[in-house]
Image 1 (cartoon, rainbow, N blue to C red):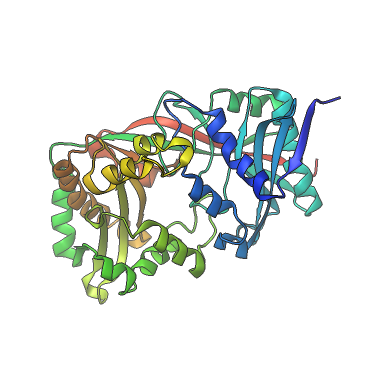
Image 2 (tube, one colour):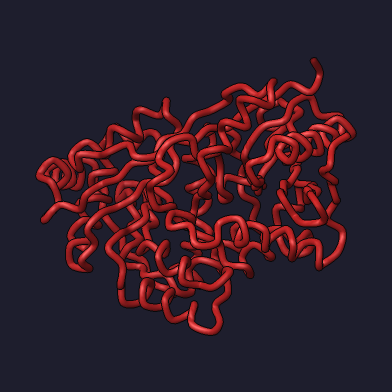
Length: 383
């Protein structure tokens, strides 16, 4: 008989325990980058996260000897299932001690929930949407994490293999990029050429553009178009877009955000790059994900005064018909001199599908190093 008890999250205290477990499990880990407690609470609260307009979810805690030993979220994204014509239950926010009884009980809870809801497969780690962390880290355990991804111990993928039934569904790669002393000639020459040949140009946005001029929504509408065919993607709703605009842009350094417009089409937005100073070290200094007493200061130093050596390439999207025209070169020709001015030493891409050679080829002039890999798994619930 198993000594592990599964408890469904039902109360505010349960949800607090769910969030806090990650801080407990990774206390003092030099590579984990903990999310802010307030951000986790907003994402997981059914009355706050706009994704619940088309998602449903339950959260589970694994208790062993009366103490929390693991956690997992079971999520059904109905919009994604409709788009991809699947009946999937997702698992996310997965954490557990190195104990097979614990991990087995957590995944069994996800499978049971999925079957109760008529789902035919379990898949993950995935969040509500692509804006949430994806994939279990399978390589690069000695590399610092980022705000947009999740870290896990090396025993996680071993558990997935030993549990049985879980197979590879998608692999991701992440790249380390050294910031050069100046923008590589390949970028600058192509940028100059596409400006003249196609009348494309860079536009630097202001806060007024974002909040009053409609560009905030235009940016995420473009992300919806450019990410539409990516693994597991579901289109962001207007309410989600409004949430992300309010969440990310009030403190954003817009010099690190570059838009590309087509002058032949009334300055239509055709490309966007949203990059930010790395908040990894600052978030590690936010005790248990709290801004008080001094966490806010470390974040402010990174965001406003760029007291960090790294930059995160958070979201980059270019309409398919403009990728072949070299619109990406305009982005990098604009951003790299700004990275140099701010003293950034290296950059970090976010997760990219290992099969997405088009995206990976754009890093060529920066001598990219693949330093992390992640995997999403799938298990049939009908076998």
